[in-house]
Length: 388
Length: 134
Image (cartoon, rainbow over all chains, first blue to last red; front, side):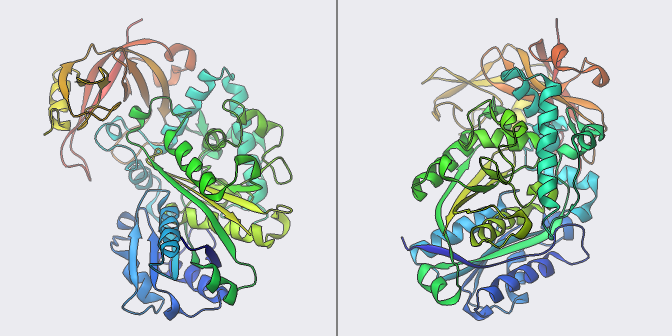
């Protein structure tokens, strides 16, 4: 296995846009190409994460159009990767594996999505397609519903009174908005209070509007290459030290999903490959699609003991400057969640953090960073670990 | 190869019969059905009738619904006596009165709710409908 690095990275502003998915991706990708100090023709493969492009623009087979838009030559391998919200992380993990193996030297990997344009009703339906369409979707289950049920499971299992848990969940949203306010590419750059969250309308009991990430448009892309090539082109390569991926079936088969085996194994694979432990992680960009999701994943990644993460949030341990900085970008909650692009935006933030380029939201002395991306109701989970 | 397809499972559920699979190797039950035992992966499985009795483990009231569904309604997960968990609707509790302490841990029986074919589904759908019995 060759040592693999990320060179340039690129990202559009997240939020409603009038650009197409191809245009969004091309902008992010060209920024990644330019900041890698290479030319389009140097790229041998394009791995594109995309969740719902079919429904958003009636567009299939997006990867070829993106490659052509960027001026990549006909011999470029261009492929779409779909794993719901984890699509881009799956694309990046595959880029990592194929560069490590020697199949390619330079791959552009990322994702694009235009979910905002669908409107709430169709977006809610198509997002729900990430659950089991035979055995679960007919109940009218939605993604807020999946995590609302998780909040009730968590409160019941760990005997945290629901009002207390809701207050701590609100603190996740407050923290992520505080961070997002310092991120010029975030969809929401505005601080909120616990009261803002607790006054929102109910989406799925007990989740209120500000417990939920928004529907978003946007794209992000990174250039994955070898250590040798990266050193020739950029001053500060960021290395992919470890990668893991897990899978699972219908939510009902997972039973008590406060514990997610697919996430636990994915994280373990990544830690083992990187030769690090949870305590070594300085900064993490994680899948806070809902406030309770951030609490539960912190436990599944081993960053906090089971049943203790909500209290850790209350104590400020997940703030920038706390025990471990979680979602300094603002996370999915404030930065936005353009499904197929989300994993690439997480990698974008970690690369910038490890290079020390994050300004007001910089995590001091960040040396090891991690991403965590969840697809569907834990059907696909990817974890990546980065170092300098 | 399949002992119980989704269609056969749905058809039985519509008639009030909850079917599942019992593993000849490890003895555990699988529901809803799949190709192999959900616990050990064995394909030596047989179709059995399940008791249709369980307890609610968690729930939510959906207030922002997907296209094709009308909120509010309760989605819940129940653990069956035989072990498997099912996703379905809780139909005999008023969504506006749904609270953790009057739902979680309550005993239920399983009936069925049929949904007509809609956009992006190949045929009608059937979902478990839970009824609290205590």
